[in-house]
Amino acid sequence: MQRSIIGGVMLFFSAFLMYGCEYNYQGPKIIEINGHTEVACRGQITILRFFGDWVFQYSIHDRNGLMRTTYNYGKLKLRELPAMVTAPMPPYPLPTTTSDGKPIPEGYIIVSSMGYRAKYHNGTWEPVMIPNDICKPK
Image 1 (cartoon, rainbow, N blue to C red):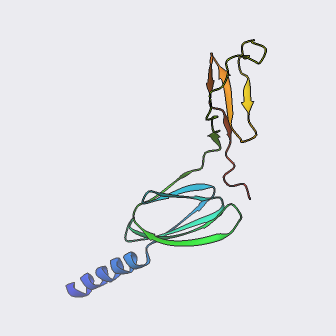
Image 2: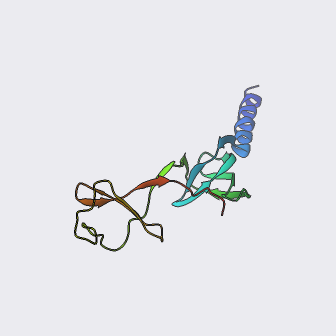
Image 3: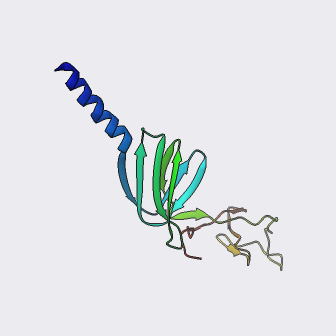
């Protein structure tokens, strides 16, 4: 009798480890796997975990709506995609006066044709927050 109970318990845990658990989330999310980062832009994100955090499969939709399924192992972390990000600052020095020698007005924002942005605040140029468009279709 005791052997059949132990055998049943072992069979249950073996099946649990073999089939794992399924988790579903809604995009957009950031997925980090072993130092590699992916973005799941829209739709449902399905994560199947086998053997704890070590073996898993996940399905995501990219920015163009294409679904990909990936099999991997290691540590998987899921986090929210930020709605706002810092725009790139110009790589060149910015002036503190206008072309006619007047001081740059407080709060003035410069936008270059290459996408650089900066805001003049308290005598220095600071980064500008912009909407995160990583999931915008190309």
